[in-house]
Amino acid sequence: MPSIFLKKNEDKRLRKGHLWVFSNEIAKCDGFLQNGDLVDLYTANKEYLGTGFYNKNSLISLRLLGNNYNGDITEYIHSSLNQANELRKTFYPKRSSYRLCFSESDYLPGLIIDKYNNTFVLQVYSVGMYANLEHVISYLKDELQAENIFTRNDFYFRKLEGLPEEDNLYFGNTESEVIDDSKIKFKINFPESQKTGFYFDQCDNREFIERFTNNKTVLDAFCNSGAFGLHAAHAGAGFVTFVDSSEKEILNAENNFKLNNCTAENDFIVMDVFDYLAKCIDAGRTFDVVMIDPPAFAKNKKSIPAALKGYTKLNKLAASCVGKNGYLVTSSCSHHISKADFLESVVNGAAKAGKALQLVHFNSASLDHPSLPAMDETTYLKFAVFKVI
Image (cartoon, rainbow, N blue to C red; front, side):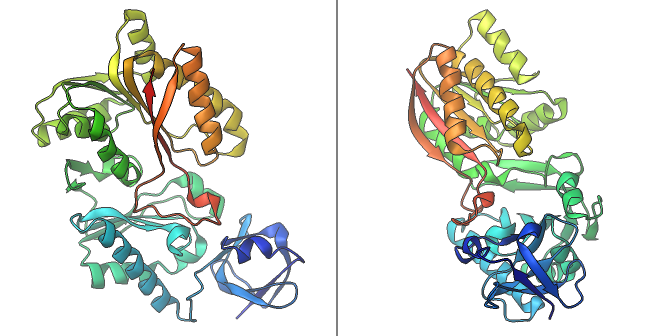
């Protein structure tokens, strides 16, 4: 098997459990290497560190597999997927829909799989996993009785890896599914949905907000499929307002509201969230609970300063719309924004709105999104609940 040797002292991060080798850390390569090949990694002193997928066209030259790789890639992929599925079943025994595989966090670099009943939606962001996709598909068919398998890739990340900017149908069809998160049902229209079809990463956090939304007036901003607001309605909210700039998503949220036979008074509004919050401030309208779950503001490190300004402005507007002793529920899914910087932006925004905050809960992504402690890249979601004083 071809080999890669690191420069001196470039192994420390990897020994702690980080799984990426960058191009500027490599001293030399032995053997004929092609993109997607499995390659053995050694220190400068020729000590074996692991095996991974090689890509000469990416800044991430090598993506390491787990330390239980035994030389059989088919067996490794099947075993790793089985372990990943068993972990999800442990935490969500009553659910048939969840994130089955979370890339490096499940030691399957560049592979994301969301399970919607017996429909499996993939995102593939490494050349090596792309070259071995047949083993993934065989596992889904043979072990999990897949009826539909297809991809819904983010082409931005495919381009970084040098992969074709395309989606593929591997089995069945790409139509729709009705899923549930153990409490709320959602109809997923895959051709029209964002990402793979649903945001599983906030499932645990949506359930958390049920603790304080009974009999409350609630705003679900950037509502997408309406999931946060639907959980508030399920918990007995008195009035739920859903706001999103996408007419398609508002219709989706409205249909999900009907699907669940929700009885809360409601309002569904197509409007830019910044504009809607400003309009509420002008009208003096407040809510008992304001929930904001915006898209990522920072796609890369260069956009961090602008993103932090955006989070500060958004949280200023949101905090201004929270009534006395109400709650501000705020999130960031930008990996490049640290927890400390995110919380600072929220506090700064609230201060500009003349509001004091009490942090009552902080969380990351749901339990089907595990992370690696030695790899910050596997942690991205920040979710905070504040009492507004």
